[in-house]
Image: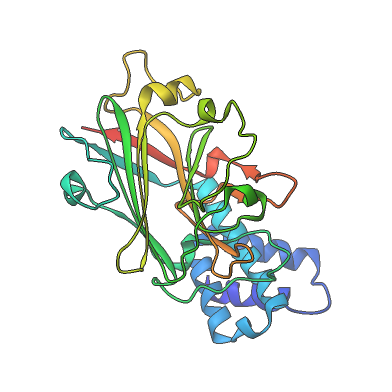
Length: 295
């Protein structure tokens, strides 16, 4: 995979277009082991110091994103969500039952994806401190609970009046076709507030908390099964129970500059950020993780 990745990278960076047979051969080789290819391409970027050449870097980052997407569609990850007898208090603190939960680590280049933004030709991910997260999940008969502990060196409140510009840091949660966003909001003067805004808000409890040590954010939430079922999530008539499966994704949009976001942190691919034409250019559940309720 490493040799194939080097070959693909060099072909992509060659001014003259490589022939279709070579492209096809490389694509097949890479897709046979997309995870290894992603690692190899990231190593290629560092080895060749391509961060100094944003236009070339963008080609490889797009390839990495496409490989990650293909890998997720072919082999979507499965996440086991454990049952809790004592639901957590939604306060943004990693305490109570969360201390018993095993987190999902999102702390490598495989979890980083580009965002469409004309202001940035490419993105830079420095290390876990730049952007990473630990995702905790649990459930009971009432709700699905999540806590996302995000490390982010540069935190910016989310301005929902500039949603299409992705101004500030924000979390998107996708459960099947249900999409919810939350973040630390900028205070605004509400004028002519939409009468249906309250009705559109998701049912449940949610908390966005800025860490006291200035190392990032904590997002915590309670998603009632009754609400998810009312929004089309396929649940048994008797409600949530062990063995129930559904598609799930978490995406953190990262704004380090104040002039718009340049990258995202994803549980899996499948949510493709668009620009102006639509908030989500792609919503592909097949690439989401498969959640399985355990008891």
